[in-house]
Image (cartoon, rainbow, N blue to C red; front, side, top):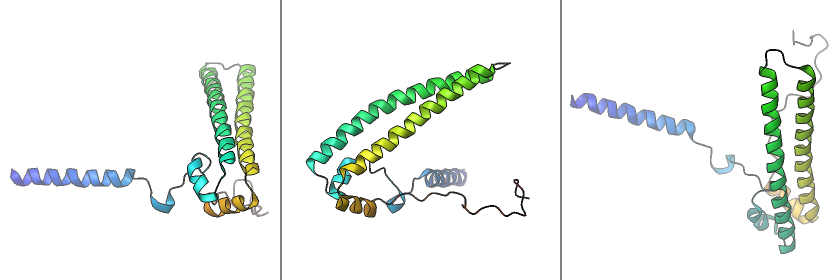
Length: 158
C-alpha cells in the first residue's frame, strides 16, 4: 500500500513538472517586448529628453483610447458577420456590406499604428534612432520565399 502511494505521488510530481515545462514561456533574450509601450525602457536606452517623453506619452495615451474604440467597432461588426453567415440563406448584400465595413475598420487600425510609429520616429534625433535600431532590432519574420515559382510547376505546386 505504501509503495502504491509513493508511485502515485511520483507520477503526479512528474506530470506537474512536465505541465510546467510545456506551459513555460521563454525567458532571457528570446522574450521580446514592444519598445513603443514601455517608454521608461526607451528613455534609458536611447536617452530621450523630457520634452520627447511628454509628447510620446500624450500620443500613446491618445492612441490607446482610439484603439479601444476601434476594436469595439470591429468586434461588433464581426458579431454581425457571424450572425449573417449563420443564417440559413445569408443575404449577399448585407454580408458584403459588413465585409466592407470590417475591411475599412481594419484599415483604420493599420493606419493608426503606422501614424503612431511615424510620430515616434519623427520625435527622435538621428543618433537616438541609431541607438533604437541597435537596441531593438525588428523581429524576424517567417515569410515565404520571394523567389518566383518555377515555370514547370502549376499553381498547386505539382
